[in-house]
Image 1 (spheres, rainbow, N blue to C red):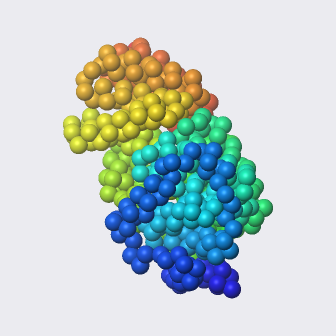
Image 2 (tube, rainbow, N blue to C red):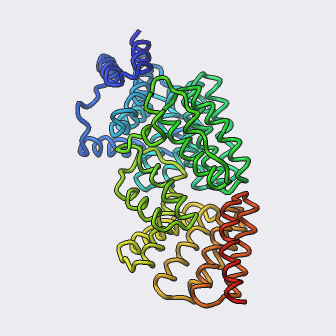
Image 3 (cartoon, helix red, strand yellow):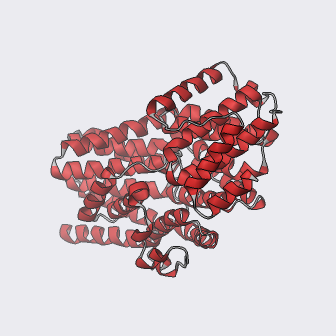
Length: 464
């Protein structure tokens, strides 16, 4: 009865009542939830959980005893519901739910919902900076899902584990797990995670350089699915990506006018009115900054970069696009810093450079080497070390090609061309810019290819 009541309250978007219901039931089951989650409380839970896990190997976790206490099985169910309800209004409390689920699994045995606990724990660790351990628990969660997992959480486990795995394995291949995750979610009637897997697949397809017409076709499907499911927050994310891809491919983006959501009259006022900028503005401003950077619109990029820097970090769930945001924030910072001799901006670029190099060294050379090389090239360009920058630009182009990031091969070629032009080597510049045009056309970013070609034509006219 309480489970049904909680689901009805969540369906009505009465999250406060749903949370109160969940906490009350958990208390009756002997699992108290802290009245106020302070940093001290969170650290205490984290240390307890870490101590419990310290002595256990992967194999011991996967082969751990099964949960048999009916009260604890029921508690795991309500903790899962509470996690979902907290996302909307108290996401900072979610880690406590995860830590309690992990502790229950270790003390009383693994339940069919334990795979969700461990993948979310991995995501939490990764978000705190320990991506390698996060990846470890993602793999444990997938193994538990195959062994004892519930169909109810399969879509969620696959969604979150795949995003962690994308940091350590070639992203172009690992994202195909999201197709499997979407199917698993649909089988259990879980439209939220069907949508999330579809969106993660589209997002990673785009950032890994898949052909844009294919990405747009996938996005149109995801957009229709999300509108039918009436998941407004997910719709905001999908629309934002759809807008970026539309600009890259050079087609009119009419998604804003076509949205029909009877529960949200504000959607008629346009895209921005749907976004709670306090909680979810960061991704929105990133897309504005990225698109302006991509089309070399300096003033618009600088404005969006300032808004992006001021916006709060969004939900703590760890996703592959966080690495992309760090990459482009670094490139934007170096451009602004170099143009305006802004030491703070250059320092921000150097920080992105360090982050990307660390991921290339410790996680995946395949996914991050070319990005680190390009950031280092921009860093050396800012510092005036032109010979070093030259080699790094060349290496960045070569690495992007070797690791099949067509979009980043095009970008590295363009930035290398600009570098060579501004340092007085027009022949080398025209070679790289011509290569950039070819790669942008291959990626199907035709407006961008035309823009670089126009720039290149101007150089040739001046030279002749």
